[in-house]
Every structure is written in C-alpha cells, then in structure tokens.
Image 1 (cartoon, rainbow, N blue to C red):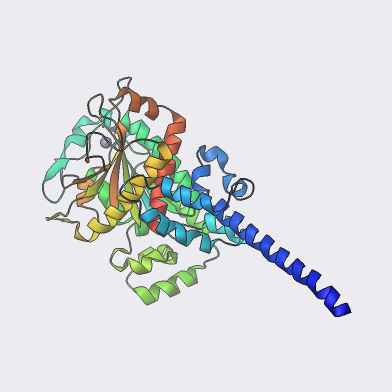
Image 2 (image 1 turned 90 degrees about the vertical axis):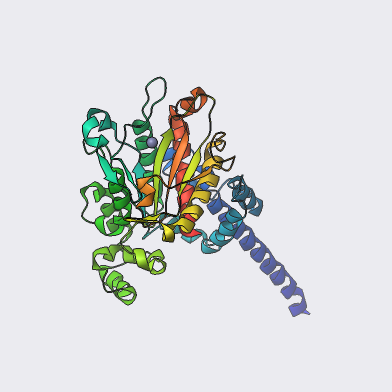
Length: 385
Ligand SMILES: [Zn+2]
C-alpha cells in the first residue's frame, strides 16, 4: 500500500523531467538553426551565437521555415536536406557554442574580391594579356562603379572582408586573393591559382597570415602530430598541406589536397539601368590548354545553387532580371578565374551597379553585411551539406 502510494508521483516526476528535457532539446536545436537568420548586423554582434539559442526559439517549425526561406528558387530540395543534418550534431546545449565555432574547422575558403582599388592607377599592367586555357584575356580590369562613383573594387573588398569575419567565426581558414595590400591585380590566372593552392600556400603566403593565426587558435586541440598521422594515411605527398589535413573534407577531395575547399569571386555588374538583381556564374566545362574544369563543374554548381539560395534569402534581392532566365545562375567559359580553377569555384555578381536601386543597396553597409551573410551561409551549406 505504501509502495502503491509512492511510485506514481515518482513516475509523474519522471515524465515531467522527460518532457522538460525534450523541450530543452527542441529549443536548443531551433536556436542553433536560427543562427543564420539572427546574424544580420554583422561583426558587432559577435555575441550572437551566445544569445541566439536561448530566448526566441519557437520550436522545430522555425527550422523548417528557415530552410524554406533559403530555398526560394531551384535549390529548394537541398536546404531541408542540409537542415536535417545539423540539429543532430548540436542537440546538446553544451556543445552548441563549440560546434558553431568549429563548424568549418579545417576548411579553407578562398575569397576573391573582384578587381583591386589600385587597378585604376596601373592600366598598362592590368591590360596585359594572360592565358586562360581556351584563349587570352586581360590580366584584370578596373571593374565598374555606381553612377555616383562608388567602385566595384571597394564594394567587393568590403563584402569579402565582412564574409571573412563571419567565416572565421565558424572556424574556417579564409584566404584572400588580394586585400588592397598590393598595388594592383592579381591577374585572373593568379586568382585561380590562389584557390588551387590555398590549402598549402596558406601557411607561407603573406596575405594569409590572418588565416594562419586562425588555424593556430582554433586548431590547437588537434596537435600537429595528429594532423600528420591522419594525413599520412591519405597521402604521403601532401606534407605541404599538413594543417589542412585536419579537415574531414580533405579525405574526400583526394585530388585537390592543396586547394581551398571552396572559392567565391565577388563582383558587381555594370549593366544598363533597369537591369537588376544578382546572379551566380558557374564554370562551363572547358578543356583547353591549361584549363580542365571537368572535375569542378558539378561541385561548383552545387556551391552556386546554395550561394544563390542563401544570398536571395539574406539580402531579399531578386535573381537577375537580365541574365539566367530568372534562375540567378549563368554558365560561362570565358572567365580565367573559373577556367583555371581546380577547386569548386563560382563568381557572384551581387547586382548591377549602374541601376540606381541596386546601387542604393550597395552603398548601404547594412545591405553589404546581409550580402556577406548570404555568401557565408551559401558556402557553409556547401561545405557541410
Ligand atoms: Zn567585376
């Protein structure tokens, strides 16, 4: 009798605990998943990951709507797939912050800020022609500008720097082709080469000292001995890329061990007024001279589709109304930066600088932060999907 009267309350307590735990897990998962949509204000919100999980999580439905928000176009089917994976990794609140900070650990991302603010002063140097595999092109151009004179080079550098900050917060090593730290260029062929060697070159390239520092701070749990151990099983020839061996992705990308895991060249277009919206340029299949994009056509399309989805969602911008037939995707065989790439790479034309409404967005730092977030999320989806 006394037993009969004491067990039920225990059971009820057990049920309550179980329900509370389940609710906590749901909140944690939703909070995790909300990171992408909660990060609109940029570097100033460095504390966002800490704040995101707790208060506002409405439950699993949040997860679904976020994924759908990222899939306004052709890539709809992909976001939910990615979304389904993530919460499982981070169902424990204690792991949440750590997982987010190491989500892209071991990944190397090449960001290529289109053009260089100094190109204008070096017309002769940048106009020399370089081999792009299936032809020759100018080393680089000055890029375009808004009618009021805000240059594409300044715009792309700002967006790239913002994206670098966000990617580093996720644990990625970010390599730049230029950071306004050289008088002009690099040429388009050098921009491609930078991505092809970003994994190995990252350690010695002066432009990448920040990336190296990142690695040191994020990666000290993985001792160098560890890295070489795991690397040696995959390939003995990659001693130059030892630090990258920590990245799980490298085991899959056996033929490109020294390259970045993904590369995005950031641009803005110079078309006619009324032409609006962004588009992503994917590499065509080019096999000519030094160019062979066969291995990167498919993964680059995956990268590009995710980038387009996330960029649209983050910025609210429409896909181009003048290129790509509404898909926001274009395929080109004439860009040296794509032709000569051996790692997944796309260009994003963030909009049209000659259109007053697009230009108004470009000159708004808040919009540029959204653009950087969209680019970061697209890359993250690709690298973790
Ligand atoms: Zn450009």
